Length: 195
Image (cartoon, rainbow, N blue to C red; front, side):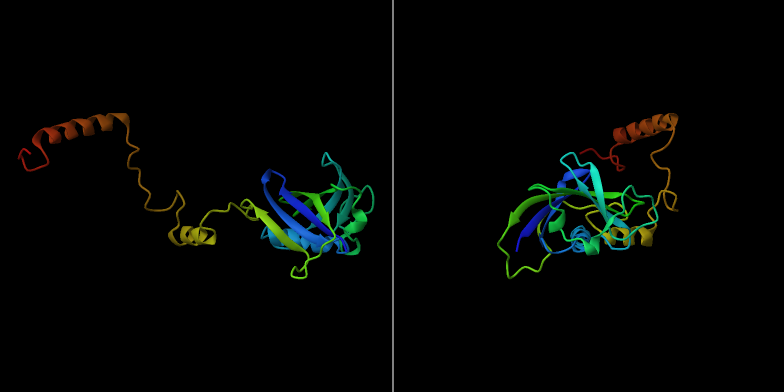
């Protein structure tokens, strides 16, 4: 049985990728779920694969289901199509699009084929993770969800109460502060004694 290894790049940043190993007899729906899990995305949105060439041009569509949109050719359905049946060459490429409103696009490239199946691996499986993936619904910070809780608890928005205008005084006011500070410096730190 052939084991296929795909590298799944984030379209905007090829330094962020996941390698997924999968049996050639498994279907595209299983690959779809593995990609989403590897990037920590939910499975609530529409998704489709496109067979592709070396220039990442989109060809025949392999969709999760038939969606209410116009198709040039009827799409294949992920659950019904084995991955091995769509491999045309040794570096076969697919474009994977998830969430048609947010347009998450991933470039899927076959990087190796092996006949050795590991008895310890449950396929499909992530064999390598490179780079910090994007957060599905916003900006991912190093603090993760904790920062959102802090922001909500303390209302850290700019319009919140407690944000003063210190340091935003007009130019003429700063001249007065300098004169007063200069007088203080001549007298010493408030005691009149010299050091």
